Image (tube, rainbow, N blue to C red; front, side, top):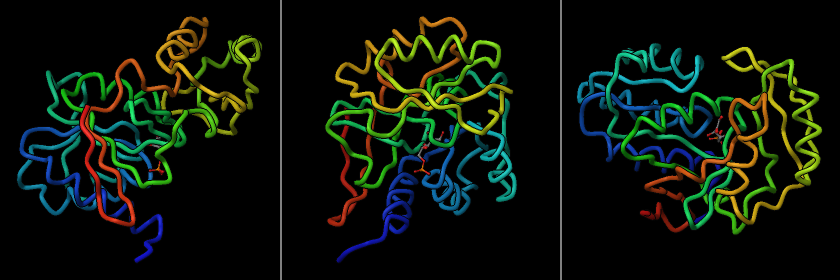
Length: 219
Ligand code: 5RP
């Protein structure tokens, strides 16, 4: 039976709720994460609350009656649940399609386990077909764009301001054979806040919704 992409996102969101035990949960941003919030709301009595990776997610959590904590008031998170724009068999991800990459990376860094929830369209052999988002301080925009061209990409300014007041350059035309190296290289460019490669710290668990059910991969 063929499912729509939205049905696959719903299925994987349901599967992720099995990982919710207690305490405070890190919650990502995007349409798949939104389906997860709907499922989380059904088991909200099990948890104390959540840390959000964006203002949009915080609003959505609150609208479901889930308490939202400031990350600074939380010492540890057992799990962070979020989608991705692309993910490989090595659990390297490309993220930031929704522009929330910086807060996503911060919340993920605090979590013991990153649970990535994706439909099968996101599972790729090599990262880079989806334009790589880079959050940049506004005054560094042109300089960073020139440096990204030197790395072989074609940066385009997104018409968007991040929750942190910065801009996003979406870098087209990259074939990212070594995501850890590329993540580190881009981080060295002055003015870059965060890049959308989540490779040095990839996913710990991938729940992948396919037409044959949700498959689980572990690092
Ligand atoms: C937002 C993200 C999202 O996880 C990513 O864009 C996937 O989104 P969706 O679940 O809507 O396909 O990184 O910054």
